[in-house]
Amino acid sequence: MRIDISQHALPVYEALASNVRIEMIRLLATKTMNIKELADAMNLSSAIMTMHVKKLERAGIIKTSMQPGKGGAKKMCTLVTDKIEIIFPSSAVTSARDCHVTEVLVGHYSDFEVHPTCGLASTVKVIGMFDEPRAFLEPERVNAKILWLGQGYIEYRLANYLMKNDTPLELEISMEISSEAPFANENWPSDITFTLNGVELGVWTSPGDFGGSKRGRYTPDWWWDEINQYGIMKVLKIGSDGTYIDGMRISDVTIQDIRVEDKQWNFRIEVKEDAENVGGLTLFGTGFGNYNQDIVFKLYYERTASAT
Image (cartoon, rainbow, N blue to C red; front, side):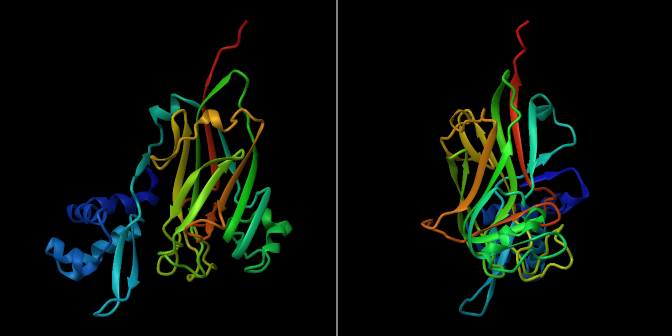
């Protein structure tokens, strides 16, 4: 999870400002627990524990789901964040490195293969029809700020402005993404593969498709409560020693392996037909979800002075 110094991030800071909630995170890092189990472990009432659970859920640190049990349905709590990165207004780390930044709009894909459930929408209306792959060919597709598919891929082509005397150091790709279930299901794993310039970077398993009781921070008012509301901010980093997602190594692919000097790049996001978890994918752009951005590419480089 990445947060900034703004009012939008206050629920996260508030959620962490409690000894009780810090201990809840430690407990949930070991296993999924229901509210009664958490209350018993911390010697609190279920009512008080429910209040703490709501704060952590509102911050996007945990998710809850109802699961049947012997004594009736129980609200299960699952930790969905393994790292929080705070972005300050000015950072000595980022300012010390030059970078080219390109933001690719969710609807500006160059190729696709989609299978239902699928669809796309702008911030004002659905584009085409639900579960109709041909909608991805509609002229209005360029205005899409959310798109989803049950299986298949979406591919983006973008220009690379690296100069001859620039040495690439690290490529960072960030996006808000989740699984795709009919309506929404927070327990709906999906193995999502990321590929750049024909080189498979690695696979991330999305835990679910988030919607229902909690709306996305930027999701338009007209959008239905029952379907995709928001995703998880994921940050891919390809450096000199491998590829990472949110700091976790997912492959040995380095920046030297991906033809980063090419004048244009092709970036594919895919749920393969033979994946262990074929749970689809949803992409959120500006005007949808919890993060007001599309797909952002940051290429960090070192510039060598030209010979005179």
